[in-house]
Figure (cartoon, rainbow, N blue to C red):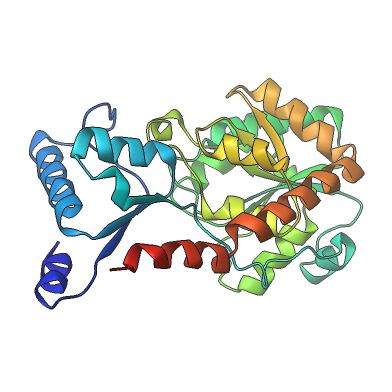
Length: 286
């Protein structure tokens, strides 16, 4: 807020971006009454002071208009973009070689922070079901975070620990790109707490730009984007459904790559940084 106020005083044109609203009416998380009302007041003030707002999902725009009285005409719904010149489809065998993965296995991959809002229980339990039917499958988890201990404990309880590969934090973007290239299937799963605001995570755009098929737990916005692009399979939040989707793609890499190619086309057309920037610049017009 101080930045916005000072920017207005100096005559700058202010555009804000909103990736989520973890407070206010309809939010089920733990937050004190004082903090909740403080955040509400700040957001209302932001709506009055900013010349434009970027909401990354239609659900966020709806909340901003209904609960916080943002002028609808000042809000543009723009998802997270991706560098399509960096994240590109690469040959799976070459990618496996560069990150030293066994080419006799097929890989389902999650990439990102190991945070509580990711439904790792679903991912691990679904993979355990899939692994019983396809023993060469491996779950590749690229990243790190506070949920790592739980992930390892659950994998051990389900007797699949040797088939779950955790890389730890990877700071080399080129290596992240190679891990993506090595995967047959990429995974997205968020807990239901995000349903109110919807989700369009950066990882989804990077998965699609890399030409890799996606299996995703249903969440508003993310599901619609995947289905519109034809880039993957959207499933309910139960392990059996996600396991079946994983197996469909792991057992048929050619089909997985068809979906991946559709995702790449969508990334080029709608989610490239160039496309997102062009649409963002219009918010700065006087």
